[in-house]
Image (cartoon, rainbow, N blue to C red):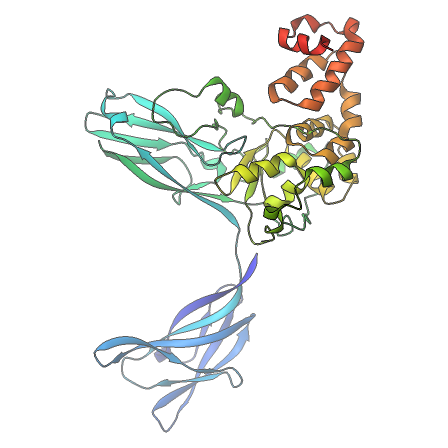
Length: 450
């Protein structure tokens, strides 16, 4: 993203003619001309390259008993300035305004506080495991850390941060280690995520431009995975707040977010099809509510989706909330920003979805293989128009050999429309389904109840 920004360069005028380079192709030459009658040296700026504007020139001088900054006027028409001749007054700061390319990132800070008592009563070489939660959405992103008792007097906090993710923790990639004497821990931590899929158009106006996709082009997928940042974002993400005890996460918490040892790809909710996508989106999306109307700031991203292959997509909340009532609710109830959410969907599917939501209906049709996964995603995250478009493929996918597996997944993730369709299919084809007896009593009761 290119933004007008100030740049400063210190120059020694005693050198005489010289070329001053700021960044990239921004440079110019300073040429001494002559001294005027008032003992001032005149300089000419020539050979200008790049798009910039000289704002001011500043030097330090002793005025009275203080050192102060003195501005030197610059004549933009003649491209000249004059500088007082005085022994020792050779250095001048040149201030310019130029277009500078900035890389958008997501920057998050979290304070880690651990009372010394959590370490004090450990034996040497014992440790506890805990998590630093970065967001409180349905599928959280968090970092596992270890509280180690090195010996009777020394402790260490070790935070997992694989180098392959490219995420900077307190300015460095890789695991974070903090060693100290036995005491209360009070650390301010900085997490910086680069956004390789950042696009200025993925905000309110919903004009994102995802990359072209091919459902069968595995080679291009592997090439994309070479991106250092996006290869392996931490998967150890139970959605819990940092507890003050050594108790492990509950079953409910671990079901909401898997650790890296349990499952490399995070689980994502899905959304269900609707009969008239356009009408339902307009009715269900709170586009007319006050918070939505006030969300016209295109200069920020406050919702970040992380795909199953660890790709990062950043959005302004109004883009997702416009199409998904579930994301709208997440934004309204969240107390943190940005909101990180992990989804169980490959990035090529998400790119197709973004294109579809921007009006390209063919983007979903081009996903020939596994289109049913988009329907499941739509069911969980409540994208009515997306559900309607992908329902035919989902309907064709369901058969006697997989319906039991799908309805179990639907119960686990509370996929309402998927459950309804599977119920109807099982009830009408129960004689053909060999795995029917393996379903739980809860599911069988749902299927055969009126």
